[in-house]
Length: 574
Image (cartoon, rainbow, N blue to C red; front, top):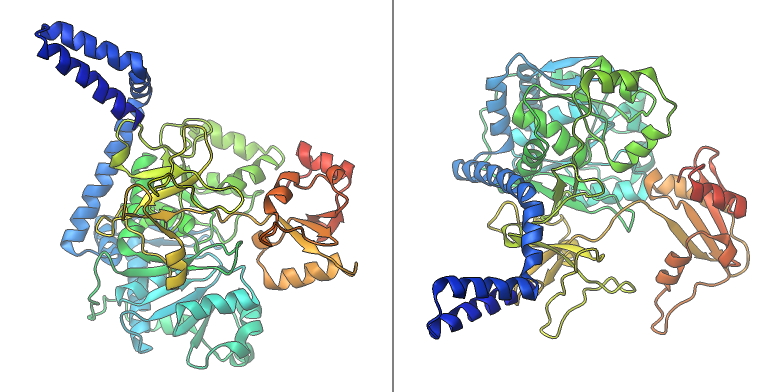
């Protein structure tokens, strides 16, 4: 708005001088002088500094928009797009399973997907039905959800860290008619088996004996797939690019996980943005050590295989000690990571393999991005700017309408101006990232969650202008500190940890505990979270007992000044 007002003033000056008969050259010079004198020079400075980045971003955006338009118009789905990839690279390695060294070519992967599709039809499932997948990362997981998608069945990709109530919740909200689990998940399934609906048929992949299968009321999946036809099924579902593909769950650190809806076009655009933003090539080999129940591993990673024909090495579970050895072994040219992985790698002893990797390939580019599976406001660092996870053009902000807006730090509610609209943050100010919703645009639509109430909570109205709607990004990160009121001094850290380990995945367990005789509240009886957040885990500024979860020792330890200094200095990793 500031630049618009400055421009209006300069044009007004230009028009006024022309009205009094001043020459064009004088009028233009005067108008430009007014523009620069009232702050317009800042716009030119920003434009010069960011024009190269913005042109590159615009190029990527247009490439993705054009591809989305083409696939939408032709009624494509992800299985159709994958079939075209198979036709281009039938004998090229598609997926490599690091745990066994097995390799599937594109044609082999295609045939296995057909087998999974025939198996799904033989179970009586039809388009719109949901089947839950609960297993550690492996190529078969891709085979199953892609094979199910060929006949319109939607997979619910369950986090393999979930247990008990969280697991039951995820299975319940998906309304799954079937459950496929890995043999390594048999214990977790056994814990919830009595609570599962008898109408939910269960299948196990991997080595599990007949007695264990019978106890879980499950059938062995592997022989069923082996005997299924490998040719394409004759049944073609009536689904398009804007229909549901599968469900990916939020982390659940601020409550129970939500089942985010992933439609075919969303899968394509996430993978396509990664491919073009970070200048990948068809001959790249990607090392994917992220879980396939998540969009980073399954879409940004595996999506490069299914859509763009890259070879992807699937790691069963991340290993910091094996990371660089694996990259060298499989000639990987692209590695995929999340922020925590870099910290884990840096904490490892120096190995000859990591030096060999950097000398052999040379890490010329690091590309980072921010986003969520369901969001419409992802941003990417395309030009290697240190410290940036992405950008939005200051020259053409409306090309991709996202904005950081001000929020109340106490309530996290949106701050609004007199007109009832949200207030944009200035450069350098913290705020909440929002994205304007347009359900007709694949880049700006918000498909929400399986639960309509959860969807409603993520939408704000009257954000950019009256009667519009926008997606609220929020923050669902790693669990930090839990403040617990211990009225009678009976709290026991060991028993608390045992119960937490049963109910919560590792990333959702509190790293710190603050034990207080009472929890302070505001005048409106809200917990004073801001003060607790400000004080952190410094034992010198509170008389409350503070504990730190030592994951290696498997216990909570009292935070004294010595432990506090070790944490602050980084000698003990958080």
